[in-house]
Length: 502
Image (cartoon, rainbow, N blue to C red; front, side, top):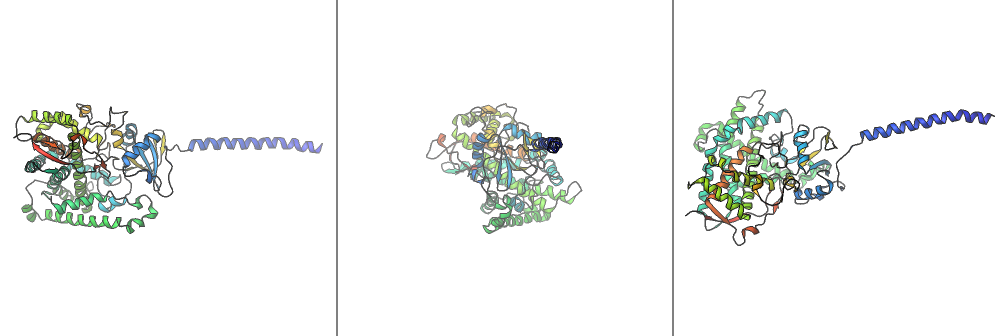
């Protein structure tokens, strides 16, 4: 009977152990399910480089194609950096409105750190008190409605100068990209510095500065390989152009400080950006901690961003008009009717030109200057469209793909300004199917400065001239893109101009 008695004692003990193990397993499964992360769909990655090989030479196009397989929200790994790519208006809405505060910082990138004095510019500064003060300063002091309107004569004067140059070039071919670059350079240098600084040396300096952003730097994405950037010269070239621009800006600032020398050189433009910033620096307060490097970063940013994006959009708009004769004819009819025989279109005329405004907006839909917008960084863990996004994730919003989404736009690849004629879409709105300048805290503050330049330049050119392509039909114009921080035409827009009126 002893073996049987031992078994009887063992049975309750075994059942207790089994129940305990089952209880632990259930709790573990429940805990694991509760804490398991639901990460967005992600393509397979390679060792070290991650998904970089899938971006190709046209990341906006390739990411759009990938989104059709993996969905409007997908997670890539660029080197060791987790990167969220949003390709739908719904995803953009959640990032730039619903969770705007969580996604409003910037990643730490090598080139902006070098060129903008440790990313002290409004575009690249991380979110925080410094950035908030800088944004308030720019919006209220540099780009307020009153100040933008005060530069009207500068805009009109430079556009008259451009029209005269085009008239003198009738019968020859003209590089419209260079023409638009010169126009925007002249306007911004007069507004920011008080005098025109156009010329081959200055244009080359600015071109090299902008091109530096298009150079991939290894260390920002694979930190343990950051030494490669020095070996291949990326750091050296960035430091060289930063030093040249810094010396240029120091001369400008010193000339402003020593007004006696500056007044003879400037063109009586009134108070320019440097004047405003120096005055703010002079009356430095706890709410306005504007150091010398911050001042220079803001001026540098005005040149780089203001010039490059504005002239790129103008060149794309002119390309679309040349390629689409129906749209060109309709726009010429509108501006001719409003001009009523006057020599030039004025800024006061622009509000009477809805089709012109629709042409600009349709251009920005198809050709947003920053096709992926500028990268953001999540500052905390976020639940986005059902997915778990970890703090520190880099975020790209594919504005190019959203602007060509067939679920949002009928015949999305066609240039049809009528779709935006009298539409509620505007530059300050919260529509997410049209986001060429971004939305929310990190939206571009220079919109209201650049739009009058684009509208006035385009209106006067199509009013004064007929444009054609030498050697090919207008409808055969190549619209290929050259990818960069700003999307430009791959080939220069070379045209012949003919006066519309004798």
